[in-house]
Image (tube, rainbow, N blue to C red; front, side):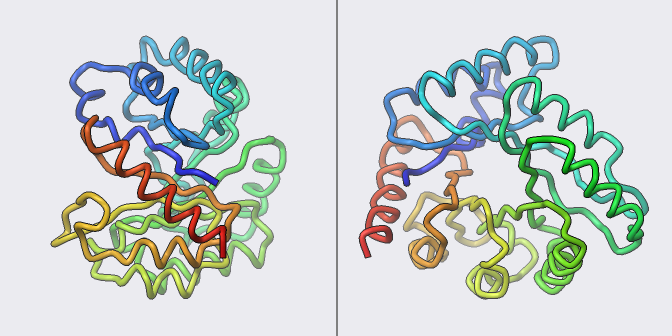
Length: 247
């Protein structure tokens, strides 16, 4: 397994007028397995043609195609009404994986969850929920909600974001120990004083997390880097994955 790239790596450049496609094309010679685009970074006027071109690039490079939805799945008393539109979009552009924030499902009924299960089972798209840096992402709540979803056999994976815990004063290593069995996608960050930094410059014991991660789970670099820094960051992740897989 090799590192994967979330387009957060290029966020400032894209927000300044670049396209996700143009920066992904620059990764063609990099040793990576998957890419993840971000819904909020698309220009709606060009999104259709860009997604088509990104799929073609993924086919050419043999990359897995992931998409981050900038919304919450559970909205207090309802399941996100846009979910089916996102699933249809994923099928249209051959996106294999959608990621969406968990949100608040405390007041979501069993009937609503059963309807969600039926909807997800109608699409050949893998959907994961992600822990958020807010009250919904507190470890005890995440654990309870994952248990609830699993008991009802809701076909949702879980994206573990190693950085989001810091903003709600939680320990990512403690969180990892408690919910590692549920993880299906891993978003990697190193944090220092609640700021994202380059790997090995923060306080996150990221190599330990990767060492204890199942070897079929993609590891996404999901923090902004410069063009000069990115090759070294990919190399660090790939070396850590190689060391783990050789044990």
